[in-house]
Amino acid sequence: MEQLRINAQADLAAIPVSHSIGRGAAAFIAIAFGISWSIWITARLLGAHVGVGEEILAFGTAGPAIAAILLLRNRQKALAAGIATRLVWFALLWAPAWAVYILSDKMRGVTPAPSLRFCLIVALLAAIPAWIGSGAIASDAGVWGLLRTLAIPRNWRWHAIAFFSLPVVLLVPAAIAHALGRPVVVPRATVSICPWIAYSTLMFLRALFFTAYFEEPGWRGYLLPLLQRRFSPLVATVLVAIPWSLWHAPLDYHGPVGVSLMNYLRVRVVSLFLVAILLTWLYNRSRGNIFTMAVFHAGMNTFPIVLPYTTASLGLVVLWVLYVIFSDKMWRRLKA
Image 1 (cartoon, one colour):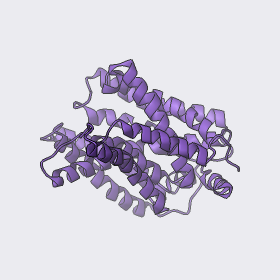
Image 2 (image 1 turned 120 degrees about the vertical axis):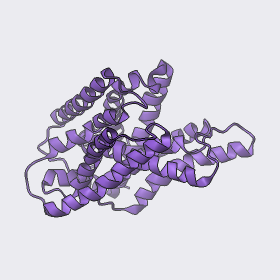
Image 3 (image 1 turned 30 degrees about the vertical axis):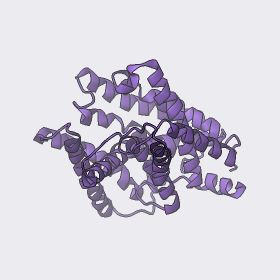
Image 4 (image 1 turned 90 degrees about the horizontal axis):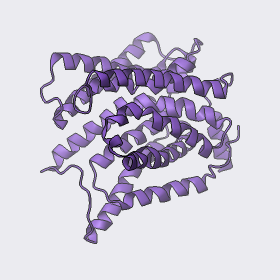
């Protein structure tokens, strides 16, 4: 276990040692909040909300990833592929991202007949995850160091854990509750399995491209390893979870999360803090693999709206969190 900690910390340090922890964290938060809040608040004032203008609001979600890329760009050459290869990679990511957004909106009934204007805006939006993902072969050493594990997956065991763990947490208590005749929440009932599979796949890919790709390079790719240089994983998690929660404020104020104080505390304080601990655990265990973070983040946003669950699932998450805290002794600092 101790050897894993040493290897992990040595392998995760994509951030230059010259970056001051305090100034680096403050700069990241300022840039991420500045980009996201300026777009979200402006879009809100122009009438965008859930179901109307979501594609405009989505631009603001990229604030954390853009902040991390700007801060880590160091103009030193990396042994990466040429510009032609990166353009091909960009195109291969852009096309499915664009299609996923268009098709998922049609299936949700939000934009059943996409206009040319809508398609063009989504084309511009899809360029952002394509640009972030193709950064895995960027010529800039700092950007390459940040993004190399996002589009070049490794350690498939942890990718699988990130993907399948949440369905297990949701479905096992739901199956037991159903067998005992207790109520089970079924978020999306369909007449056949094929529409459900199509919807679930599109929503997962939408969350992957337009949420996880936009957030994880910043929160876990930059801020978490920076803070873990000085603090234990548990303390670093708290210091990431606080701005991560507040960052959502412009969306929460007029959104479903902000309908009541209790709902806000449940979603943005309790649930998000528990998830942040699991993401830190996955990050350190997967040796800083951002793709693992992205898969878990996408699943976190998708599986609760497509899979049956019960209130007992939250208790299982709490037990999971307690297990990872004590098994990894997350109150101890990682060794350099």
